[in-house]
Each structure stands twice: as C-alpha cells, then as structure tokens.
Length: 287
View 1 (cartoon, one colour):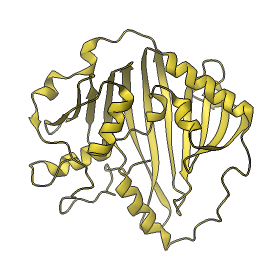
View 2 (tube, helix red, strand yellow):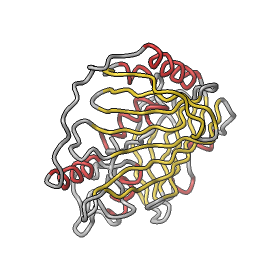
View 3 (cartoon, helix red, strand yellow):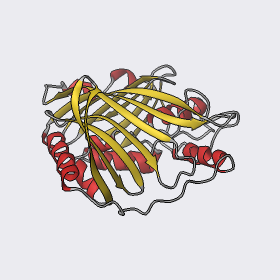
View 4 (cartoon, helix red, strand yellow):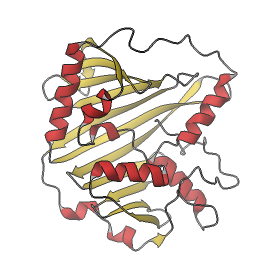
C-alpha cells in the first residue's frame, strides 16, 4: 500500500497484508512448494455438472444477503502457508464487518497481526493503522461494489468475505460457474443446521455451509486450481445481524482523520528491505 520512501512503510505493508491477504505472497508460497511436491492430477472443470438443488441454495442465500439494507457480522479468515519443513502452517485473522447499502462499509480487524481499520462512506476509502497512527485515504466511487474494486486495483486491498457483501453475490458466482453439487446437511457449524454445497467458479473450488432456515453463510473453504500446493483457505461467519440500525458515525473515524497521512499504493510495488511477507502476523492473500 505504501512505498518505502515514506516513514512507516514497513508497518503499512503489514497493514495492507492484514487488510488483504496478498496475492504476491500467495504466489511466493506456491513457488516455495512447487519443488516439494508434484502438482495433483488436474480435474476437468464442469465434468460433474451443475445440480439445480445446489444452485437453488446458493441463489436463496444470495437473495437474503442482497435484500438486507444493513448487515453486520464477524468473519474469522484462516489460510495455509508453507513452512520450511514442508507441511503448511495455518494463520488466521478476525474482522468485524458492518455495511449499509449502497455506499457504506466498515471493516475492523483487531488481529492476528497489526490491528487495522477500513472505512468507506460513499466518498472516500480510508485504511487506518491505529497502533502507528498512520492512515491512507483515497477518493472512492459511489457504491460498495465499485469501492471494493477500486481498493483492490489501487492498493491491493481485498477481503476474503467480499463475496457476501457485494450487491448480487450469486451473479459473481454464476459468471464463472462450472460445477455445483449438494453434499448434505450438517449440524456442527455455528450451532445450527446448514446445507453443504460445493461449487467451482473462476478456477476456485469452494465448499460452503449455508443456514438451512436463515440462508446465511456460516463457513466456506476454498482451494485454487492453479495452486500446485493446493493450500486451503477459509472463512467462518458468526453474529449475523441484518437490517439493524447502524449510526452514520460507524463509517468514519475522527481518530483516523487526525492520523498522519500516507498515500495509497500497492504493497507489491516495493517491498521494504528486511520485511518478510510470509512472517507471522503478515498473512498472504486468499484470493
């Protein structure tokens, strides 16, 4: 996010890696494991077909999420990263998410790694590191979807739970859907009965647990077809609150506005000397 000629750039690199799980780091992790194990035999996308029951469950969940004017939930993201001995290690971050359609989003990530705060209020995007009192602010487009797109392209900011907060979650899946099937029911995730569905879209194989009654996602796991290490990434959802009142002040921060400003930039543009993007607390991007 921040080039190394600015003070605190190492911290903001860590900040951006906590806000996003950096694609450059994921590629590095894959490269490290390519010589450790052979790539699995490829499975042809679409060879198992698309089951209507699976599609219906995905659509019902998408409709429930899209209809919510406001939304709050917690997301625990977990992802694997290769270790020097070979077997992958697992890291995790937790985010507290609030949004109001069509133009407000807040993501507070207290850990693991450096605490970070992300605010979008319909006019600006703000990425804040409270411990170092540093903030990056950029003009933003007028919708959550467009702001997420802008944050990704301009500063590599990506949230692994983006698929549940866009305006039409199913559309993003359907555009590249090559496989979908129903697995069965589970009663062990988040203390409720869920329907398990597997699908593949845009080269990503996903298993998702969706509440049978409330249609809300409870957990998802993903593996990327082009990753020879087949590292697993996932997210667990909890504390869902839909259509609850959220004050306008939730989508801004007076403390962040007073922090020292540094420009938006991609963290993979320049990696400061001595910074190890695979170090604990500096996770790599899940997507």
